Length: 427
Image (cartoon, rainbow, N blue to C red; front, side, top):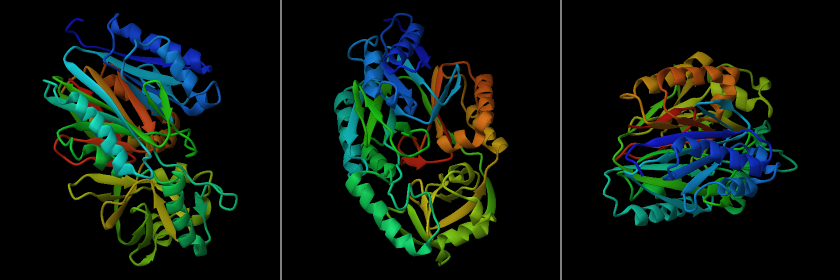
């Protein structure tokens, strides 16, 4: 193996799962000039669930990929790379570099026992990388994102207007999450378990997704397909690693005190001692009647709420569901005060420029995690994001659009974010 770093991104848009697995792997490895990859990241849209299945997708990958290559990945709402922007297909990123030690780990039952799942994955990586001579450490993580409970009476529980049902719906969400593992993602707890003995690591991650229906999504670990799991790539290297985060959100100056929460702080019961739903519509100025099951996740990303963690990191929250008087958000509330924000297509694209401009030079390769809500909100303007990215850099990159974005700097706490744009650049 030569001393030169080689990175490649691959793509397939074939409908047949096995053929797509073969093509994406061949196109990725071709860019490594015959060198074996140190790792292989694989991400697909949900479509292969009905066109051969994800086991067949992985079978196609392993028809080509060298035996023993560490592989993790999962399903996302869409992705972007050097070739374009896609909401159907499969993409991969692989790197060959001698000054890099790699290990992978997995933890299961992330919605039922999130901290245990994170600790299990962490232990697998620490055991394998404990003797590495390289000082710079990085984790890339894929965590099972939230799913929406479904019932004959309430459907997918996106917009429930009957305020008498608030307590019942909150209780059903809690039970469904713990018992059936359908519901809240609890990714923050997974992250805390993963990082509690790995604080020296930088981290970037994505919460898996389907096509924004919040029903089924999957994680990949070597030749296995999982649900409700965390899969993690650990890396020790001499490469410099920069993690950058931006948002593109516009503060309105309107704020409210959180006066009631439950379900691991995912449900806001009251704001300023009034029903949370009433305060949301009062502060945003939009009419309740215009939001329904079909458009809620196209409207609320333009009107996120947000609060600041004690270390100063902004946590934005697009509303996931209106449950009677209650608001369900996509991850746990981290403060007792929220602020109301606005987003526009222009401001979201500006976040891309902000993160890319803050990089200290041209990376060797990049992994980017962003919010599926931004993908849906931007629509065709997402091609402008790709153009802006390619104007700033020429290295191989892979952008993933999921249900949450995980990020961490060395010796600082991890964060689960939404409505954010996050870069891990390797120099």
